[in-house]
Length: 199
Image 1 (spheres, rainbow, N blue to C red):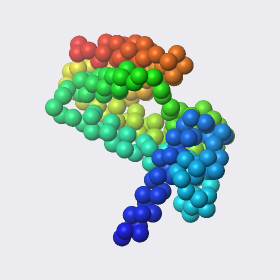
Image 2 (tube, rainbow, N blue to C red):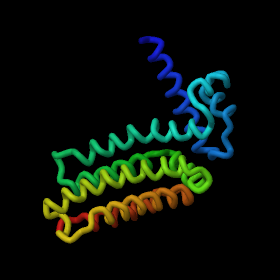
Image 3 (cartoon, one colour):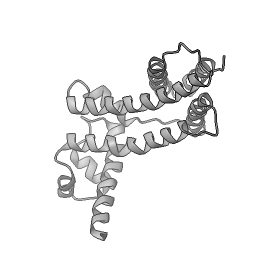
Image 4 (spheres, rainbow, N blue to C red):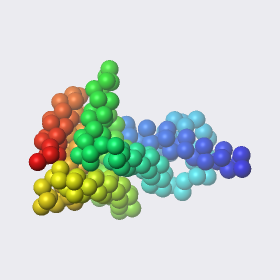
C-alpha cells in the first residue's frame, strides 16, 4: 500500500511541477527535460508514468481541473445561498484573490494548451473542450435553479447564458493578463451582477 501511495505522490508531483512550467513556457517551449528538472526526478521516471509529452499534458489537465471543477460544484451547490448569489460570490472571491496579489500574475494551463494545441492535436483539444463544457454545465444547472426560483426571467436560455458567462470570464482573464490589471475582471463582475439581479 505504501508503495502504491509513493507512486501516486511522485506522479502527482510531476504533474503539478510540469504543468507550472508548461503554463509559463507553453507546450512547444517545454520539453520532458524541463518537466523532470522542475519535479527533481530522473528523466527515466517520466516515462514510467507517461507515454509521451502529449500523454503528460492530457493527464495534467485532469489532475489540475478535476479539483477545481469540484470546488466550483461545491460553491454552486451551496443551498444556504440563492443560486444567483452563489454564482456572483464565486467570481467575486476569485477576483478578490487576484486583487490581493502584490504582483499580478496569471498563468492558465488550459488557456495555454488551447491556444497552442487545439488545432494541432485533436486529443488535447477535445480534453480542453470537455473540461470547459463540464464547467459550463455546472453553471447552467445553477442558472436553471435561479430561473426556477424566479431570479431570472422564465424565458431565459440557461445553457446559452452559461456559455456567455464562461466565455466572458475567459476573455476578461486574458485582458487582465495582457494589461496586468484586474479592471477587466471588475467590469465582468459588474455586468454579471446586472445579468443575475433578481427581476
